[in-house]
Image (cartoon, rainbow, N blue to C red):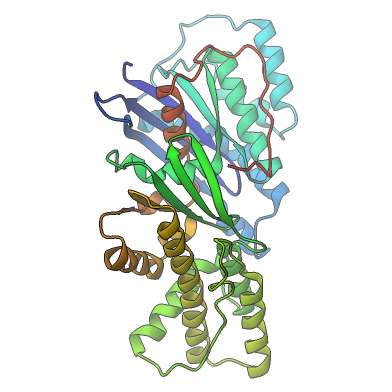
Length: 393
């Protein structure tokens, strides 16, 4: 297979992300070589901070406003923005009608699209887009634009599961990853343990029964009067308490840590934090930092314990930890310690820091894997992709 370039689009939550990913097969390897030619993310965090979390319709509006400029930036960064259509080349009216039908539900998106896109003719080989899981109003923006580009440029369109993106996110730097593998996905919407015998074929062996761990970080952040998102702020306070070596004042539960399965539960831990705050009535700065440390340690203890149990029963050559919470330093250190002590032949992989949160590079990597496994690269003629907010792996 020759070297291919994929334009990847991700709008599952509150980040508008576009990347150009190059894939090249390597003889004798189960994985292609992936190269990120551009990696652009437009964050909406400041907009949603006032609400303490992501507001779906606000996210949709911002995606519609930002997605075309982000596409232009990604193409420019990849050196593809100067590839233009021949002057005067007409656009088929049937294509125009199909594209307008796709874009009309998003405020001003059709106008922005036609103002900037028709003159471009970048030498890409496929377009990839996240179809779920995520916020459906946000997902539809990315899907409608991806389908519009595929119709306009006559390119194949590769639908991608967002969770699979997090699973393969370390592969951009680690094509040596071996199977079988175990993946722990930890983010604002998901906490899952997934066993992988073949890339593209996944078996979910554990999941959260209520809150995802990233969601628990955000909720506890609000209880501690911290800005959204809560995870980085809790980590910052925890580090302060740890550096001071304060005597331990707080003791929180480790929910389901001894259960015989591989499932998780974080709702009760969040409730325990709320009760601790209510009993104290008013927390000093030092107490708040100590409580942040105990909460973070409780989450990490559970994640590591469940992963260790899964590795015992599902031996793996590679352990992948992906998702936004994978950026947490305490979790990284604890996972490294657990692997070194109990599973030393297992390769532990984290994504690069700029690929722990939502991004389009990981979506391009999934598309590259699908293409390397003979995904149909016929150009699409009509829109046929549906946003699936509750899509499972």
